[in-house]
Image (cartoon, rainbow, N blue to C red; front, side, top):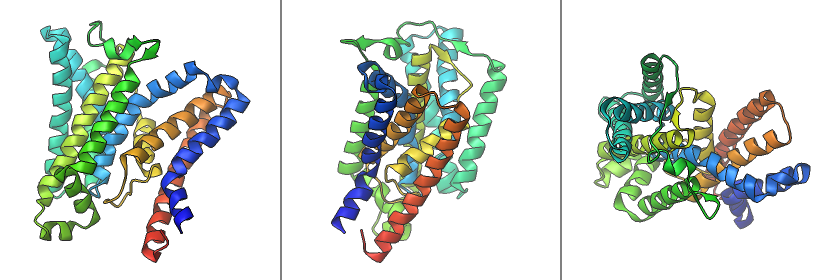
Length: 316
């Protein structure tokens, strides 16, 4: 039983090692320092979105508006610089504030108006992406401010700065979820809402807080994405959203709430990025890459269901 629990808890890291060895055998460049940097940079924006989704999964809900929020909040920040000439530091705050506002609305809809989180946030995401398409006429908004683009292009000792932001975000998330009363309240709310309420936890406030945190992280992801691209792109699609949902589940976050570790969220992010990058380097068709991505999502759901059945039987 102990060995099965170890495998279930660490399967994502085992798969990363196995796939990296296989991809490195087929294309030695995969294991090079340059590709490692590329993997970490590519994982940064996705990784922050994974955190955003994970906060809502922990309470037994889901936020499908994170990609729409990313695009919307980054557009608001870029617009503030272009039309009002605000300093880039203020533009970053505006970007994140826009994300927080969307998160607050989602949380209010779900916690206080009792809307279904899947439908409410899906509708919000579609609304935001439509608003951005209409405002930009589907054109990329170029950001020329060097300060705003610094994190996306800067290096320290030939290593990009972007992944530092990723690891800082995950470290802070770990501290909040593992050591704060609010973090424990999220787990309790997701594990058993009635029991949490009976224990004196304000369940509505916990749910509102989870969606607000998700919006905050989506805004941060919007800033990082724009900083890296040097502009606001409206081409972030459904595939990114599916990976943002699949990665935490692959890493052990339950779709039913109450369970999940930050290290697993990071592992799921890296596994998806490693597989995508590896398949591209060994010249697998983009069509097959999408097919494999779908298979990974199915696998994530199956693994989550297996974990739950094992726990119910007392195996894990």
